[in-house]
Image 1 (spheres, one colour):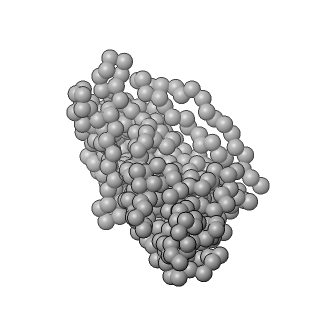
Image 2 (cartoon, rainbow, N blue to C red):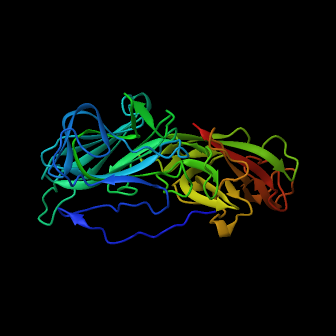
Image 3 (cartoon, rainbow, N blue to C red):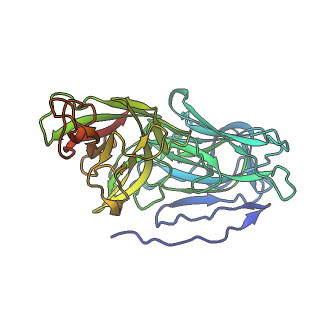
Length: 419
């Protein structure tokens, strides 16, 4: 039975001029917990927190690090949510006096997966907050956002922030809440998660404060643990609705994706001139990993590019997060030049220049998004000898010695894999 959904959108309350995010997920069973730290000062912090290292305190209704360390939540996921994925929203407090804010995801005492927030150039025209996500083997993604200002134009002292952790997929973080202020830097992560960790005999969850002053924290499950929960960022996912509580097929989209062209059929005999074994690399356009574009490709004197964009598809009970593949001309505009998609499904948003992946044939782990029925285009003009002068016809690209009354059907399959 599909979970009940409730629309909890409302005008957000504010605190010190900063919006406080809502305290519930839109989906039943997705909400894990929240803390406004609105209680008596305490060292170490009271509530559902465990100080593993460093020194932390609750002071003036915020939680603050005295010495950096690890303050882990003791809120664990349900056993059925064994990935331990989460979205955490919180406020960064004291931006005008703090120089760094750090939060951690994963096993609290050993994880290297962190997001850092650095206030820079306060009250100057260059005032900004640098957000850095740290993934495997020191991989980082960095974005700088303008420092939010108050009604007088001064740099504010508190702002909303969020991070999203999806084990074996990615870690993302940004200013804002519930999806963040784009672009949202993200890194791929490979370590498996858990619904709960035993640290020194204490059960702890997957979120930890490391350094800084924070307030108005909330915590919820994401779509990789339960398809009815909120998604987070761009990633590959294939699961069966409504919940798919077993491990769905999922993976992170890397910074480089390779498109492999394979000739699968032709309505005419060709003398070996049709394109085959073509491979094109697409590279992410920003740290958000939501769009990938290839460099200019030249095929038989004609140029084109490829673009891939994140989309969410649903088909007959299958929830699919994948990439739409679009044909571009050499200048980067959608155009069917060397190729075009045959028989597009316009109801699904497809066209002669864009195609969605095949749900049945595609996989996420390993990454293999399959796009069928790519048609080799033709030019129209003077047929090559031995045709008589003045005879016009359709000439497939790269087959300049053959001419047809109509453009023959020469089809390819394109597969997107890790670059």
